[in-house]
Amino acid sequence: MGLFSAISSWQTARQEKFVANMHKKNKCPDCYGRGFIAPAGYEYAYPFDCTSCNGSGTFSDWAKNQI
Image 1 (cartoon, rainbow, N blue to C red):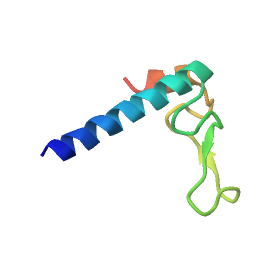
Image 2 (cartoon, rainbow, N blue to C red; image 1 turned 135 degrees about the vertical axis):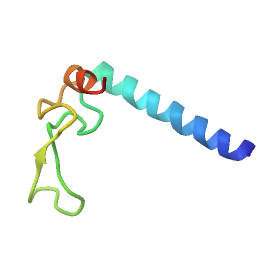
Image 3 (cartoon, rainbow, N blue to C red; image 1 turned 180 degrees about the vertical axis):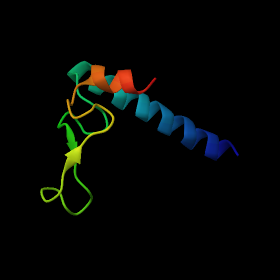
Image 4 (tube, rainbow, N blue to C red; image 1 turned 60 degrees about the vertical axis):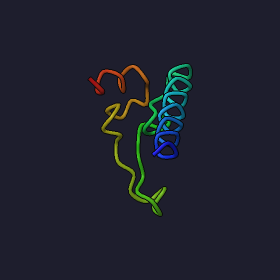
């Protein structure tokens, strides 16, 4: 069980570091600041607005929706 808890804590730390980095850049962590998300394999065909930041791409809007 030590291995699984080590992997879990590593993933948690990695995610927290990523969110902190996106906060410094003021970008939404889900859409990387683009304001839209494209389905896999269709990067330019059918993008839709990011529901986490409401299409703005900013970290502050993303943080409001996380509560």
